[in-house]
Length: 410
Ligand SMILES: *Cc1c(COP(=O)(O)O)cnc(C)c1O
Image 1 (cartoon, protein in one colour):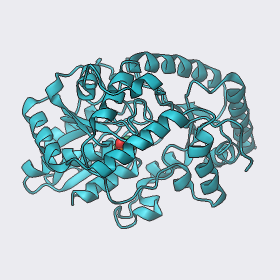
Image 2 (tube, helix red, strand yellow):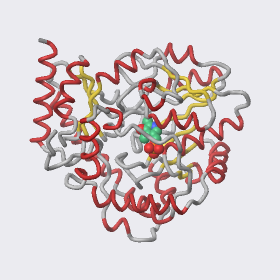
Image 3 (cartoon, rainbow, N blue to C red):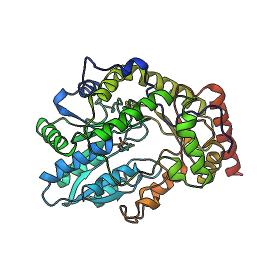
Image 4 (cartoon, helix red, strand yellow):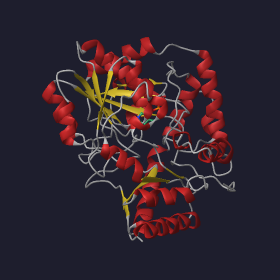
């Protein structure tokens, strides 16, 4: 594959500015995040990643959860979720998706729920909101808790106006590279209930010690992110790795889905917090602009036969780090990816596989019959909704999608 001159990101991250890197900040990152999601500051605890937030949440629940050991997650989600459940020594239960959507299937969920269920983890996907009513109902019926995975949806709103992450008993967010607001690796865990929030904070205190080596490494990575996050820099830190993985036929590597099984657990240092706090002031405006771009692109793609765009349901206001397309035919999806993935246009797969289909997760995820999750993984294509995706680049993507869908029909 030839090296493109520009490399667009697969998701729209909030670009950092040099001013963000000054030391000191008028506000803590934790308070800024709490304000963004309209919670009192004591309900939110900052963590070193979204995965660490999940580890904290599961540990806090487990200590009160008596004999409960099952954690129900969508069969198509971030592999880090599976690694966090394994880290806590809990049992991962995969819920198949509703056909043609990333929501958990209601019947499958009811069948999985029982007296052993500790938590259900409904997951927002690429800024699109997952159904919360079903999981909340199932959890209440069996005395389990709901952990709302809003790792990809900081700043989104549910149809009733609640910020994403605040409808579950516990909510989690990620501040990883490329996920909107980023401090390279970071996260947060919240609870509306004061007592539960306090337990989360106590758990985080205990599980996330100061570890200077990690903080120094992350600070250097964040500087690199500030430097390289743009169409010129991403060639070196992102595009090269994608093309190498694709040349070796390693889709999970190309989708950046392969993670070490060891989960770094440590506190986030002051400097990175200050950077995040400053950048967070620009997040609402950034998300509004991304939404405007996305809605325009959606309208430009509406006419492509064989392409369905995953959109907000009535009243919802999701975030738009990427446009998520579901092609009617896996062959069309693969043909489109063969031309677009690695071409520097920000086209990707988001997650490469359903959880049972990652080779490296064999020891963590048991084989499972999850046909809808596999079908979803086989038909999904994502387009990074960055400010750098111009009309020329977008027209090229549309052209390939049209061709691929037409050929698959023929
Ligand atoms: C990224 C992600 C996580 C983990 O967050 P990190 O900050 O990368 O550890 C969890 N769940 C989902 C759905 C994610 O996309």
